[in-house]
Image 1 (spheres, rainbow, N blue to C red):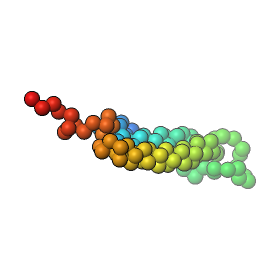
Image 2: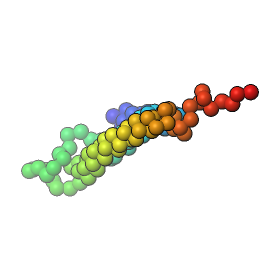
Image 3: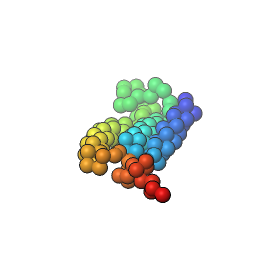
Image 4: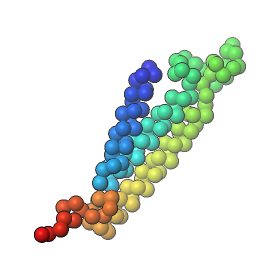
Length: 121
């Protein structure tokens, strides 16, 4: 299970970095989203020791009260907060993207369309 999770986090991170380096604004926004998903998945996976299955998330009767038998609730709370903040950030970036496209007429990150920036001989 750990190798599947590590591969998923690696693919999300690699795709996010690749999209961040693209010249279009929407691709940059999608890259930031994929990177935030990778970080959320990484933080969520750190909540369980060894990614063990069938561990109690809260205190239960008959189970010893030590950290070996329970999941850590802090990463789960952090991921939930990060999902909400990431959604708000993406919505804000999309509004800024639409405003910039309306003002500049292009969606390139630097505001210059590659086809129109070539000098005429």
